Image (cartoon, rainbow, N blue to C red):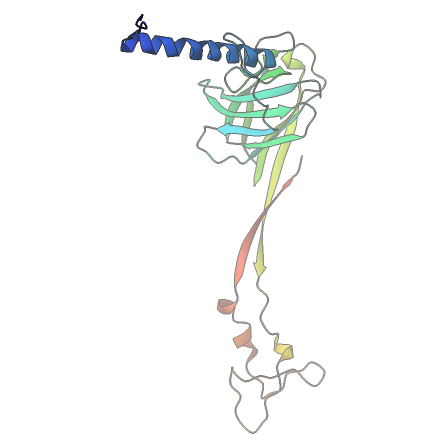
Length: 247
């Protein structure tokens, strides 16, 4: 009787034997995923990041931003604005503007050059709008100064790019300021002296006694001293600082 042939495999041969079918299955699954668009092949570009909303991106100045800057743009592009220190060229502030939307931001004091990047497809904070036929960059011809003007006036600027042609100098620039005023406000008393009851004449009144005004608005002689109620040291007040656009 012929003995059956027994193939004895070592560890390496065993791993190769079970690994080949698994590798073939993985390659087939990868090919199917590429056909269905589930995977991005090597060298292909990933989906572009979503563009931010109109507003401030960052402020590196470390100073309080209190001066107004209004930028008006046409609706055909989006814009990335960078304020640069006019003396050092350092980046101070950046903002993103969707073309045609209202945009106003408060900036720190100083003199800055305004640099714009414009495009239609946002590529991220590093690439901005990338390189393409719809992208461009320009810098306003003159630096803008943001400072206090006169008494309590925070002087800023309005930049209108809607009528801008190919040159940056065509942007229309006009003043835009915030005027401040200070007022003094007193808290209302919890109870008016006119709402208190009259004190009988049988005893001497005290500041704690309730009383009221009688006889056509003339105080009774037995009523407490009104100076106690109107003592300035007992009145609570506060200063209100208000600002409004005045240009």
